Image (cartoon, rainbow, N blue to C red; front, side, top):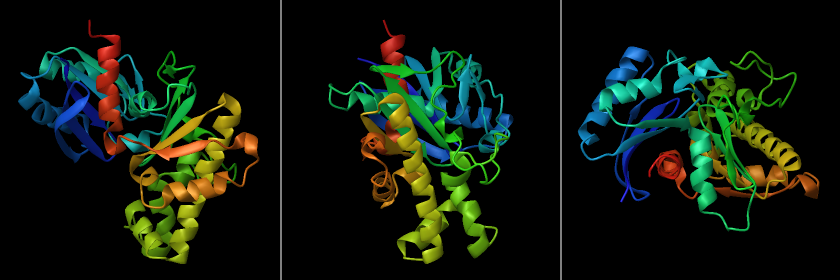
Length: 291
């Protein structure tokens, strides 16, 4: 029996869960802190009640994970957490073995386990605070030497598009993410507008919101087409708060169907929903470290 304390660190929320034999037993979630000091305190509060039950900690985190340190192409998504030593911080708190991996990579792995065994190449794309991806090629999860693999949200979508926090102009993330959706909505609903507010207007039939959401979905469809023609993808799984939102999948499918057949692939929603990162991190720890 495996008892893994899983952590999912995102741009807006941090969740912890006890995962016993790949099943979530208990789960707790709070907003993501914005400073290193606050993050250390929150991690301690969340993790300490479970450390006597767990054999290890497995973390799925936004950003690039290199040698246990959290960085990002777009530091804006991390607030004051850029270069946060997440692995050593958790090890100091729990005194337990700790593994840290990018959240989209972790989610890609758990969703891949649920696909038909004949599938070899898939991508998991998360559309949330930012846009990230995890790739499984020839049934092997791609991480990369520096943890960079799968950061498809920073592929070019529009050379004349908005500036991205990574320093580039017109990235997928700068157009399609929940953050970008909220920024686009500020022209219509004021400076306090969020991506969630825009989406509510979209579901209510507002034409301005429909234009914004369709721009996001078309950008993701173009990304899927580019990845499919490059990597011969057989399936793409969507996750994240925007990716899992009502009607979003259908919008992406609509735009992807406008591409030539060679660029099209099967798209589905994450079977594990918002828990894909938690389950993937726990699964990867058991696969790679548990004897």
